[in-house]
Image (cartoon, rainbow, N blue to C red; front, side):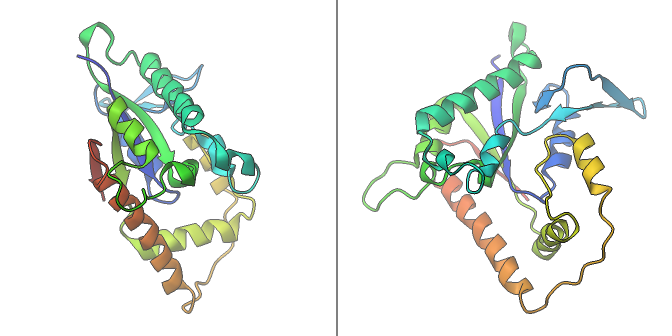
Length: 225
């Protein structure tokens, strides 16, 4: 049985790290790449947790709009080649599919790690899927779309991060996240006037991705609220 490949598609402050941990705790499923020199740990004698797992393999694209605008014009061929290498690396490191064992392997992919032009709506009158969605369907990569539906809490969480740590950076493993989160201390007060607009913006982004994924022909898609 071949290894099933997947992407856990989400955005920051949506519980994706925790979800990846849950997936890793399931027999035969790997979410992310385990760092060299780390070992699995038994919790309560039953659950195995991968310590030091790098759950985001395309994180360099997160800076696409600010630090490296050139990445906005990355070609489909270049981006999917990188995506392919990352998927294969995770699968091989976990021995997924070796000797007919089957299993599933994948990693987290954030909305902002995908160049806009690879998922832009196709012009009217054409029946093709967006370029990246078409590649995923042909490559038989499943997409698990994780959405934190508690919008106010999620929006507040994002605002809290911006408030507490102005230079907050993206994290690919629990250790680095825990270190930076320890710096949080300042209380924050939400602005009742601007919060509704922030929530609507978050909802609109999730909905746009949901519609794109739902109507991409041949794409294996699971909505996970």
